[in-house]
Image (cartoon, rainbow, N blue to C red):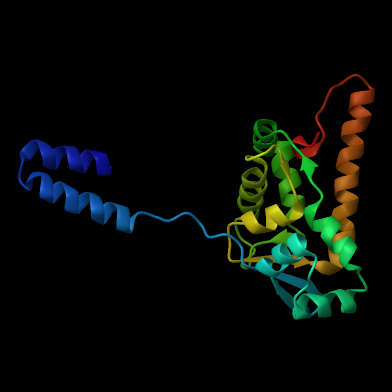
Length: 197
C-alpha cells in the first residue's frame, strides 16, 4: 500500500523528491517494529511468582558467576550452578528449515500447543506463534539451539514458565521423541519432534 501511494505521488509530481523523502521517513518512523526480545523470566509455582532477568541468566551462562537474586533462587530450588548452566547452554541440534516446516504442520502446531501450556506469554495469547518464533530464531544462525537462546529470542518482554508443571513438559518431550524413534524402527521415517537431529 505504501508503495502504491508513493507511486501515485511521484506520478503527479505534487511534492517533488523532498515530499517523497518526507513521506518515506514518516512511513519508516510509523512502521511496526519487530517484537522485543524477552527480558524477564517469570517462574510460577502454585501461587508463588519469582522473576529473574534473562541477562542475569546469560551472564551466568557465560561466566559461571550468579547474580545475588539468581544465587538465592538456586539455593531455594536446591539446584547446583553446574546443573543450571548445563540446562541453559547445552546445544540441541536442529535443522532450521526442517524445524520451520515441522512447526507449521498440524503435528508441530499440536506440539507447540502442548509446550505452551508450560511456557507462555504474559497474557497467555499467541503462545504457539511466540514459541515458534523463539525456536526458529534460535536455530537459524547455526542449526542448533539452547534453552537460553530460546528464552532470549522469545518475542515478549516476559516469558512465563509454569514451574510446578515442568516435569509434565519433560515427560511430553520424551513421549514425542519415543514416538519418533518407534516409527523410525518400523520403517516409517519420521523426524524427531521439531526437527531435532
